Image 1 (cartoon, one colour):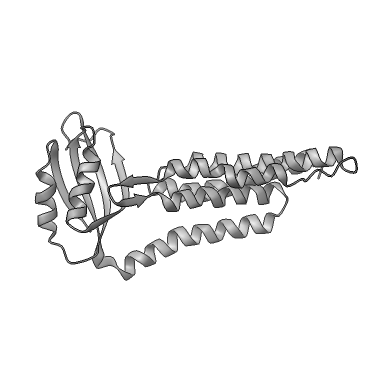
Image 2: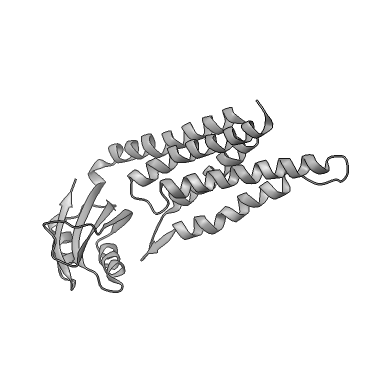
Length: 225
């Protein structure tokens, strides 16, 4: 295989592997989904290819470190990871998504360096970790998890106020999704927020619903799971 075709193959492989991880994030409505993970993996692969090419062009002429440019990906990806982390009251969400971006960058570097087996194996392990362990966690503690679906009219700081009420009820937000597409059951201008909650102690779900309904702009509240 010619060097150019080999490079294109590595770039395509990085898109595929990043897409596998990104698909799982997209399916769970996370802040960094399919496109973000694909782009991070592809960009990391390109930087690794560039590092190798630049080193090859000056080999024997200097003591240049071929890993220096690629190493900046590891630290630079922290900016994207920080953007994926959100704080709702005392709860911090998005850490898993941020970790995914960091690992995806590593997968891209591995693919760009030609370490195909490492890149594929890491992708498989990440996918298993996200899918299987998440389901196992819910299965082991299924009585402590439920989803709160809220139809509401958007007001500044509304989600923060909801989070504060949930903290009083000793509920922890494990995931948040917002839907704005048209829905026949919603009033005009309303949005739907789905909150995946974990309760550390027994809580009356009717009390949770009644508490959320006290907020201005709440149209409908229901519990699922």
